[in-house]
Length: 336
Length: 268
Image (tube, rainbow over all chains, first blue to last red; front, side, top):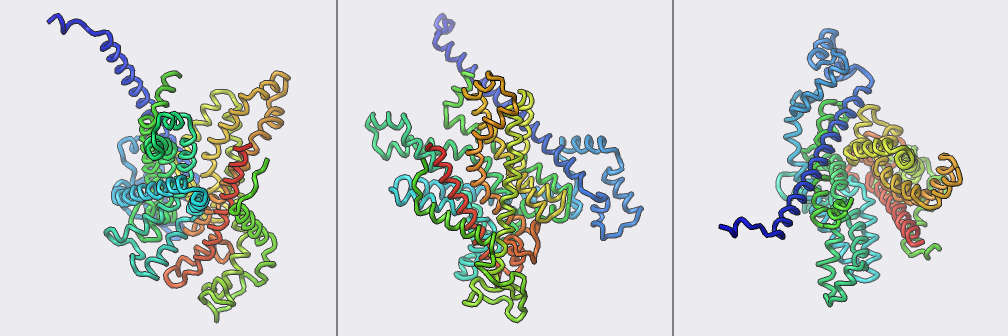
């Protein structure tokens, strides 16, 4: 009985530390969430007001552009239906209010709700992006490891390969891959078909340029890490070169690469616009392009917001991952 | 001290020199007329007479690619200049202005980052319509936030340096400090950034042209040639392959040069 009431001071201190750490994480999380909400609001507002700058009558755009010669009544009806006859401030507030409950309006061109269009296309694009990111990391890591451990020749060849890969435009790579693997060899379909075979070329197209960028950063970080004091210390402790490389240096190479994932997400989405168009694959990128071409304002806003949300989620998660990989970041925050 | 150039850097410099020659005096490398049509020899595959083949109107693709160099490089250069110019203004405002301005510009950059990749460019094109000028500005705008973040940190590095403190103590005004101390000290980093960025700008601008949102045919510009060749990809690959190859060459060569400059700056 008595024993359970006495508290071990060291235990108390540990519990306090635990709570301190928890509240620090909580504060970090709340700050990040606040940042996400702020950026989303700003993106929504920028998009809303930017698209008001489009010359011409939005009601006309809804009814099929200037060539449609819509009657005055039809225009008035469209204006009333989409709330375009209200003052701008009212329109903005209504728009924000609808966004808050997840209503993105309906597409002018597809006569379908934007949410359902995005719901249909988001999945295929995410599959493409995640597979491409994984492939890119695999290629980049292989290149980086091979070129840092393979001597001078490998280093020069590796860095050239990375720079050339990073300089290749998606559309050109896609055309070249189709030329080799579909037209000449006939191994893979030139357009996206359901199943694995239809995914190989689109994924490769997106992965190779990204791998070029990631590889450059990873190799630099690997070289830096191999020369850093902690690797020297580990070497002095008698760890083998292999252990040094895989256990210590590689972890450090992961830090800048993880930091780049947010950027990589953006590059994958831009790439998806091109790749989905070339391979005739359903997805967010292709919907965005057709929305841009037909000036389908609600759909453009919807896709932009979804991409911005995805970007914010990815960067928040990578910040979190950064803190888990690199404890120094937490300690630095503690001192500040 | 400038390091001795390796074989790769020599190749990059030679490629850039050739591209510059093609841009400034295309007639030297390809004496023909890039717009001369010859319907009888349309869609010819690469041969001795037409090393890169011919397009749908029988125009020689080699001649068109060479004559398109100037416009294509100009678009890349202009987009990079727009991006870096904007970013410099942002970076100076953030690094030199009052605290609230730094806070404000940093938030603006953060918001712009949430339009990743070509997203901002596409939004810009929705508003202002497709075309060479809009797509160039669009690419410049979408690269600006990335540059701005780097330039801001450079400006802050200079601002907190002892020599700038000395200049402040000596009573130099803000403009004089920016012109005499900050700009020369960030110029090196800016130059490297620009060299690394040109390749990316060329690739992005040509991607927009390929999607039909940038330069339009029959201009002898690489992106426009790609856009025209898009219809014939399946049967006449050379129409898109060769202009694309030149985009890869110019982007890779400028990036290689940028990397090597970066290493020199770091080493010195």
